[in-house]
Structure formats: structure tokens, C-alpha cells
Image (cartoon, rainbow, N blue to C red):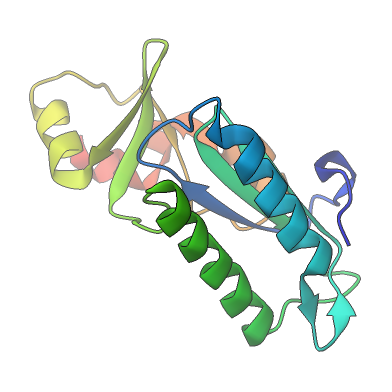
Length: 160
């Protein structure tokens, strides 16, 4: 059962899927439609899950699930990963590759491999105050408070 993302409690579980590229204007409505259809039929043990999604910066898919109502099961989580894999194939995206760093460089959103990000740190192209995206957040509350943070407060701090 899909609900507005804003109505999910802060304790809701979130999964963030960063894309290696921006979604095109033609892809956005198609991805939105696919996400809506998936969330509307998403279940755990034949019970509808209260969930939602948002697409941020035309680049990140964020799925939220209110586990206070019905908790995700292994099968329902597998179904969501399978759905994301389908999106990857259909739109030629990379959404499950976690060995990258997303960050702001001025007003430009960057997506770099970890070795490339380390090289940028070494070359002083990015600073410890650079805003990075912490895709490891687990709840909606953490997502709101700690998704975009300075690198020195993130797991990337070890590169400085």
C-alpha cells in the first residue's frame, strides 16, 4: 500500500539506490510509474506493506517502509532487489553498485569510484568539508538528518 513519503514515520526503514547518472526527462515518469506499481503490490507474507518512495536530484531512488505496521520479510526484500535489478536492465542503469561515492562539487553532483574519489582527495579537489551522500542510513530519520553530510563526518573521512 503506497502512502505519501512524508507520512512515513521517522523510524521507517529506507533503502537508497544511487544511479551512476542522472535520469533523463523521458525516464523519470517511467521510473516513477514502475516504482508506484511495485510499491502498490509489495507484500510480506501476503500482507500489504505500507511504503513509499521518492526520487531525489533525478539521481537517487529512496524506498521507505513503515515496519511498525508490517515488517519486511526476506522474500519481500528479495522482491525489492529484483525490482531494482529490472530497472537497471530496462533503463541501462547502475543502482546496486555500492563501491562509489556521490558528492557535491559546487553545484554539480558527482558520482566517482572510491579510487577516483581518493585521488581527488589526494589532489585536493575535494575537502573534508565536501558534502557527501551517506547511503548507509537505515531509517527515514537518519535519511532526513544524515544523508547529506560533510565528508569528515562520514565513512569517507578515512581518505583525508
